[in-house]
Image 1 (cartoon, rainbow, N blue to C red):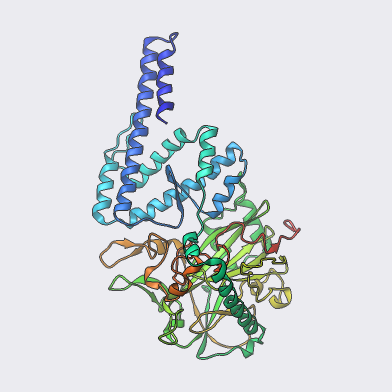
Image 2: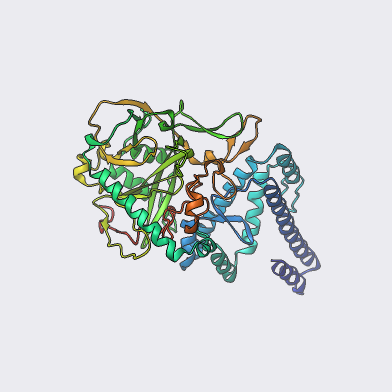
Length: 521
């Protein structure tokens, strides 16, 4: 970077045919550019140091070494293996920058007041030769500085290749734990236990709906009453209209985003025995410990993406939280503070669901529910645990046309206590108590207000909610997952004990499900 700016300066001096005034002007511009880069680098370094000192690092997207203004995730990292046009590369970098700026905003919001004031003062004192940022916010200064550094550090082919090499996302498994835990041996034992859970889950799903056990009262948490319902054609049009970019990534915003989430919003039918079976909003209690306000049912939502061959598929994520998974005895390894479920819908370009899948917010109990649009590929793993497919969502199950509200909005039957999903169906066959839930952006959980006016993330700097640790971590550690059973942040969900598999892996489905040759029909 310094060499590049020095060359600009030398070039301006070496142009002997120019007048002395022109030479002076070029030298001043080169000096000013170097000063801007140096000042921006220093300001970003001060910001990063302040964030680290305050222990408010947000772990949702991974920082990229040597590019502190850029961050990546498993979806964006998947593009680094491809030869991108200049326009596509710029669009990719813009996505990395958006993650970086968003991460900074979260971290700045979570800083103590004194630390924020210090950075605000530094930002207000920054003066550039051509632009003065006097009085501007830290966020605005970071945006400007990031644009300056991108222009200088990523304008050559070798620099772009270097970014691609570094824009990787590590997995959520510790190899050293597996080595110490004699993984080749212990994995076989765990594989046997997983098989028993799979068998029991299939047995539950094989029961008629009216034979599923009810220990308390069935309560249905339903979407807001003003929810919009789109047809598949309308969904397809939104996906197509918002994919008009060089990477082909669907990017719905505002009203389109709301309509999509409305159209596929699930109903959560829960067997409620105690308040631990009720969903709610995540808040801090008087002791700064996360609690679930069951008087304010909320579903947290966000987009994600899957890749199948050259196809980029939009995904809708719906997350609910329970106060806890209550322990059944003093020997219960699985119970503990907080519990939750994430339900995901992966959409085809034609606006129809390709498949549904779900996990608990620890990454545990992963289930896949392919539709008739997804062929099931033979799983050939010998040691790695297979993906559990307890139910296929066929037209017979949906009962009505693919453009109807009933087929878009499934009902998820959830057991009490364990909060296991026991069935997916589309028409309520009984009269039960209903409660509307409200939507919230999953981003809110990364910066929740405390009683003293400060903000703090629900998640630790490692992406794990420490208060939700389970005793199973002492038994399951040979599988290499940090604190197995604990609730964790998006991007940190390992969903297999045996093998390596992540909920947010862009290529998760390619090995298990065939993509239909239906285009946009």
